[in-house]
Image (cartoon, rainbow, N blue to C red):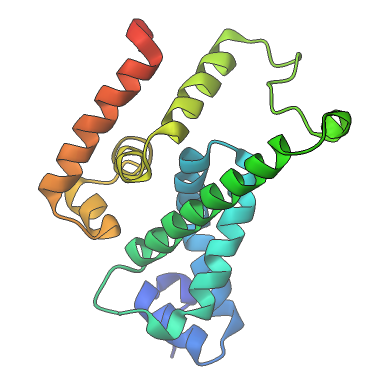
Length: 189
C-alpha cells in the first residue's frame, strides 16, 4: 500500500519527481507556490513580474532537483533560488532602464508609464504601493532579511538558513533595513 503524495515529505516527493513521477512535481508546486510567490512579490514589488519570477524559480528548481540536499528543508532551498531569481530580475531591470533612458526623445511616446493608474486612488493602496516601492529600493541583503522575517513570517533561524548566514546577521540586517525604510518613508510609518 502506498501513501498519497500529499502525505509524503518534500524529500520523498523530490525523489519521486527525479524518478519521473509528474504528479510529484505537481504536488511540490501546489505545496509551495503561494509561499514562493509571496516572497517574490514582496521582493520585486510587482505582482505581474512576481508571477513570472515564481515560474522561473520552479523551472530552475525542478531542473536542479538532482542537486537538492535532502538534509536541508526543501522550502529553504526553493526560497534561496527565488531570491537569486529576484536579484537576476533586478539586474535585468537596471539594464532595461538604462536603455530606455538612452532612447531618442521621439521614441519616448512608446515607453510605458510605470505610474499608478488613475483608477487606483484609494489611500490604502497608494500607501501600500509607496511602502512596497521603498522596500524594493533597499539593498538586496537588507530587503531579503526584511521580507523573509516580516512579510513571509519566517523565524530568525529559518531566515538565516534561507539566506545562508547566521541568526545574528539576520537580526542586524533586519535592524538596518527597518532604519533605512523609516528614513525613506519619513515619520509616516
